[in-house]
Structure formats: structure tokens, C-alpha cells
Length: 286
Image 1 (cartoon, rainbow, N blue to C red):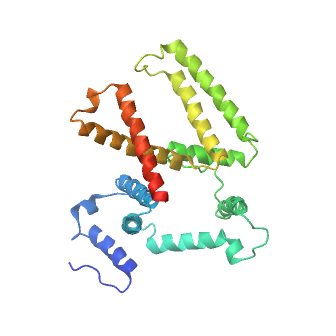
Image 2 (image 1 turned 180 degrees about the vertical axis):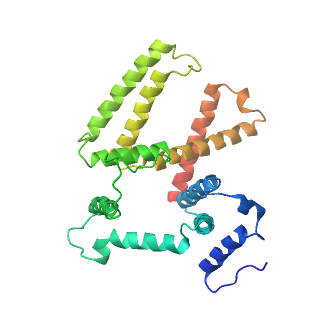
Image 3 (image 1 turned 45 degrees about the vertical axis):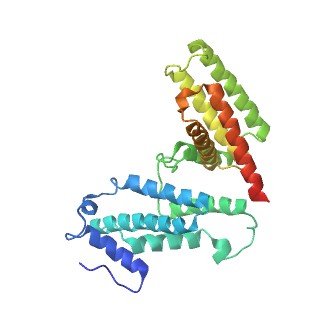
């Protein structure tokens, strides 16, 4: 078959998606379901995030296209089931965004900050549920937070919800003091389970529980510091990877391998890598 050739790029993409799923289409695409392509949807989403963080506009355009295809693909699957189609998806989000932005498409009174917008957003979401008759038996303010979210993101959403109800420490110091308290509790559990000089301790449910409390508090502390915890950890990962790759290059120059060096010697390479990156940053800022 010939590729679609409409005037609209979006029409071409929708027609192409339908072609891939047609009897004469792609064998792989014809086998897929909503569930089977979830990994691809997640992968494309994270690739978009990666290009944004790197400030790579050329690849951002490409990755946004890949993500858009995931949306058209799911819409095509739904169309084949008679559930809905892409136009319904676009119209629904259009109507929803108009409704949730009365300060843009209606009166602007009383809305002067991003925080006020978010408060109004939650109120309008609740009105939408009531209007649609979504009277779920779960009346908790935590209802509706997807369990499939990554743990850090879900923790942040949980804590944001309860904070709006006043269930939170009033100051940063309160969270920090609680964090130190939880570290002591973890230390107590560790001391009872084995020596901290061990290379690795066996799994223990109580230790996992205490460590989970620490992770949860770190998310709370991040929010109190106006830092997105997911972004913060990704940047920490990136920083470590950049330094470690430099350490690898230093080791490679010696003709040896990482395992040929002691940890103390590798730490010296690590400090050298940190210094190199610091100097490079200085040069770029000039």
C-alpha cells in the first residue's frame, strides 16, 4: 500500500496507525494490545524527559513524535473496540482544560499565583467527578492516586494531598528532626541484625520498614525545599555517572582495570574527576 498523503500531518499519522493495524499491515503491530505496549509508552515518556533535561531540541522533537504515536496507537486500538477514537481524546482534554482554566477563559478574579491555580484545579476536578456521577465508595482524599505511579512520584502526590488538609509539619525543621529520628531507629535495627562492618546484610522486613520511612521523609523534605524528588535523584544519578566515566578513563590510561585498584586508590581518581569537572565548569562560565 502507499503511505497516507493528506494535507494534515496529524491525519497522515492517524491513517498510518490504522494501516499498521489493518489486515495488510505490520504483523507485529497487529499483535499488540493496550497492555503489551505499556513498556513502550513508558520508555518513550522517559526519553522525552531525558531530552528535555539535556536541552536537546532536535531529539526532543523526535521523541515527542514517538510519544504522540503511542497516543494514536492506543486510540486506534480503542477505535477498533468501539470504545472511542483519537478525536474523542483530543476533544475531551480540550473541554477539560477549558473548564479547569476559568481564570483564562472566564473571570480572572482571585487568581494571582500558581498555588491558587492548583487549589482551584483540585476543586474543579472534584466538581467534574460529582457532575459525572463518579460517587466512588472510596471517599478518602487519597482516592484516585494511581498505584502504578513510580514510588517516588506517588509518595509526593500522597504527601501533597494530605498537606492541603493540614496534615504536615509546619516547618522544614520539623521534617528534618523527624528524619534524624528515623535514622536512629534504622541504626538501632541494624545493630540488632548484624555488624555494620559486614559487606552486605541479609534481607530483613523491619529494616526495610525503617528504610521505607526514610525514603518517605526524604520526599517530604524535598517538597519542603521546593525540589522535585524525581528530578533531584535523576540529576544525582547523572552526576555520579559523569564522574564515574571519567574515573574509568583515568584507569584505562594506566592500562589496568578498576579491580586492579583498591578503593582508596579509586577514591583518588574520583577526587581527580571532581576537580576536572569543576575546572571545566569554571571555563564554561567565563
